[in-house]
Amino acid sequence: MKGCKDMKENKHSKFSNRWGFVLSAVGSAVGMANVWGFPAKMGANGGGAFLFAYLLFVALFSVVGLSAEYAIGRRAKTGTLGSYKNAWETRGKKAGKVGGLLGWLPLAGSMCIAIGYAVIIAYVCKAFWGSLTGELMSVDTGAWFDAFSSASYSVVLFHIIVVIATLLTLLLGAKSIERSNKVMMPVFFCVFAVLAVRVAFLPGAVEGYKFMFTPDWSVLAKPMVWIWAMGQAFFSLSVTGSGMIVYGAYLSEEENVVGVAVRTAIFDTIAAFVAALVIIPACFAYGLDVGAGPSLLFVTLPRILQDIPFGQVFAIFLYIAMIFAGVSSLQNMFEAVSESLQARFPKLSRIAVLMIVSVICLGFGLNMESISKWGPWMDIVSIYIIPLGATLGAVSWFWIMKKQELLNEINKGVARARKGLWYNAGRFLYVPCAIILCCVALFMKIAF
Image (cartoon, rainbow, N blue to C red; front, side, top):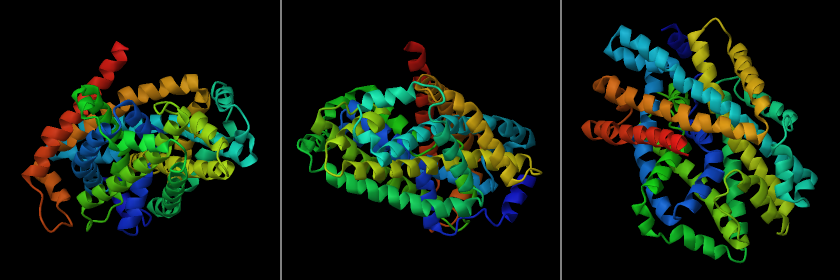
């Protein structure tokens, strides 16, 4: 495949070392799902008991699902389109053509979520500017958020800056992704660690810790608690049948893909946990709704920061960390789409493809700056496109691709080969989880 050949010859198509790869993969995984998604779902689904279920799914999805996506990308030496073709081609040339066509669905998912994601990062930039000027420290945060989130074209300048900044961090492929995440990810972790320490001193914060660490096991009798935990684990790890494949394509042949998948999951989980240590105790201290979702970032936390010493300083660093987390995730979405298009249309230069992706993102996204349009768009993406893409990927790796071909790739760089246990966990645990999540998401949309 010509796209694969181009990939191999591209001097920018490899991460320089294991930790550069892990930080970039963690950057992709760490984002809004960690900062408001995890605390909100934990708050609405039993606290510590939800955490237990979530960790079980993270363990399964990282060891099996995420490692499979890394392996598929590394085997094909290209992203979504080429990897699906490569996997299905183990069943014959005709099957490979079918796989190449099916790969467009999860790739479309990456593009669609990038469009919506860029909007919410623009909101974060608006909050950062408000904290920098001091405006955010003196306003009614609910009215302030409603004023710009309900209006069309209210964050255009920030939106353009986000897209251009993301594009610039991708110009050199894996090298520039790695360099930017070596800065962004440590900053993210440090800022949230400092905020967590500060929140610990708020009166009433201890009730939040009790909620997090004193499980009410009875809530695990509710099927939806498990479903929410499963969905959060899927999307927090970015196991969507697309994005992580392209990072796998940049992974060294000598690396243990299961090992790096586990490291990615560990740091992603730490990020979610640290965010929860900031948000949940703070909400308990102020008697606020921990399940508020996106408004946690723009209404709840600013309200808390207004009332504490040096709140403006904490606000500035909070939103810097969130911008970094958002851009690192948006990088992956852009890269998944641009690499696949460049492999599919090799006459286009990398810069040209990135420009096309950026224009698409801006063109559609500018019409969604009002949250009344952003919300329904993200519902369509999260309920239909992303679960379908994740399910298609899971089925492709564990039911369509020849078993030995997948195991050969998984076992590169390991001392002890993985055989039936790992593969059967993928077939009979991971794939059913993806299918269940897809069906439940569809059913809930139809029902409600």
